[in-house]
Image (cartoon, rainbow, N blue to C red; front, top):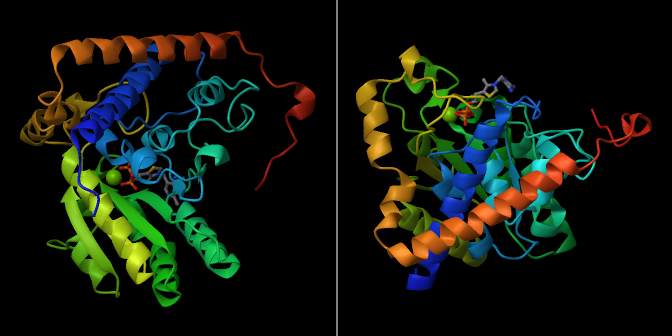
Length: 319
Ligand SMILES: Cc1ncc(C[n+]2csc(CCOP(=O)(O)OP(=O)(O)O)c2C)c(N)n1
Ligand SMILES: [Mg+2]
């Protein structure tokens, strides 16, 4: 199994910081109402998307995700300018400016798609893996979804199929304990543990603290080895927490649907803070400057870019 090196730790920190700063900039710019698509920020949950490019380098390792997809897209190496253009609805966007934050794609990097319908991208990811198996192609498919997707019927059908056909899939549940304002306790039986329940249907599961970047990194390494060696799918559950409202650029802690103690616990155990001690001050300043420059370039490119023509509006639409 790959062991995390000093260089990996720095790269991981850089990747988390980059995703965080990009999303903070999105939140900051949103108030100008030029970005008109809904945004589901992954701030707080970045440790789960951040190592993707490092550990699943090949574009043959493919990612699909749901509505909260920014950190997976960026972590897998999705193009930043195309991403920001997509948010602004510009023609240089990853989906020509017609899809927005919840429907991202960048095949070159291996980020295949994200979808707004909860649970909906799970069977698509399984289909991609099935196609790999039939065509004898290399690569693993990583399927990201939230804790509420585990409540959909298609989740069980997809897992069943992947287990039965021994498909090269890593299922990744980002358990942030909430579906919009609803805590798990209002949605799933008391005392149910997602990974325990999923294990019961016949798949190996690993559970880890999604806010601990090194634990997340090591869990992915174990999962990759497992899928490659045993030619079987695996299910990962990462516990984590979002800092912002479910959808949008604001914080909504005043609504009190999450306990203060809970919020404070997760803020104290933030993924960026966890790794900060491993990076010296000089490096930190260098990273911040480099990231800031990249972000400013991408945003000014997007703002200057053109909207798609009206004649394009009905092309390349799928329903
Ligand atoms: C099939 C379906 N039902 C409901 C919705 C509305 N909806 C959008 S996001 C969301 C919450 C999803 O929660 P979770 O899967 O835990 O992801 P999180 O937002 O916490 O990252 C809901 C209910 C939807 N998009 N699709
Ligand atoms: Mg959730």
